[in-house]
Image: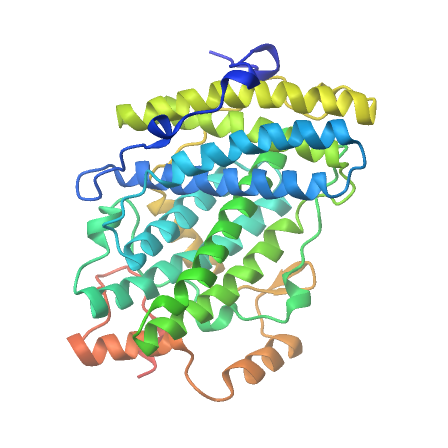
Length: 399
């Protein structure tokens, strides 16, 4: 059944504020929940944080007091939504357990988007990035077993494979080579807009999570690994945000943000297995429908344009969290040796890449290599014994 959010009305804005009892959501049970429920929570927190920060930036760039007040009203509700969503995560989970869930999001969300992306250049950007998040999951899994003596499978539940991807040491590039070419706003498929905003938001949330939680560890190898991968997440945010056409007006971006929230809440409501969480997705969807209409009215008033000229006439097929094992193995077999050069991709190391590697590593093994070596010293193997057909970890092969 098609669903056009432009034709649907939600809860009136003046009825959306919740009291403390309503915001006091019960967290999920980390030992019994569907891992993809946790992934959906992490994703929607990222989307809400991006919506809030974008609204703040828009408010700082508009002179109209009425617009500022309207943005403040909707932004407060977005902030309540963000709290309700993020507080679904259980306090009993360690930082590393949540980290592994963040990387599961990065792997399966980006892989799904790459599979569904209609534009070949944008698809390649997602394919390139997902192999790096895939390796981050593997490095953190080794750290998790070292520090907490538990397996990452207890978190990902076999839905996402934990094995080496493009080696993390090779993710460090000259910053100029992290900037991609943007899509063209007047011809881009509306689905591509949503994909770019979704993945940018998710990577931004991961970057923020690591830069705040990394220094909370005592173990030197943990502090160093978070520092290294945190820098790579900065590269990823640059990589994905540069896909968005900078010529889009503030109002085009505003309606796209609100439409994307409708799309994702609707998608997650359709597939959610936890009834309590599903009820939150449904409630927030009905709130976002009204936020979308407010944004559309602002666009008509400020831009003098019909939002339908930017947005899809109906929501795309639901964005789905699902295993992507065969797809990722195909990418491992065909794209492991890629790096970036300018706005494109090459298979051979080039001068800027080699200079960055030499400057950063300085002839020493980076934390992402050392966590494997230390795990091997502790357990006599890396995190997962490789079976036939699995991609080997180059750190182990070079020993």
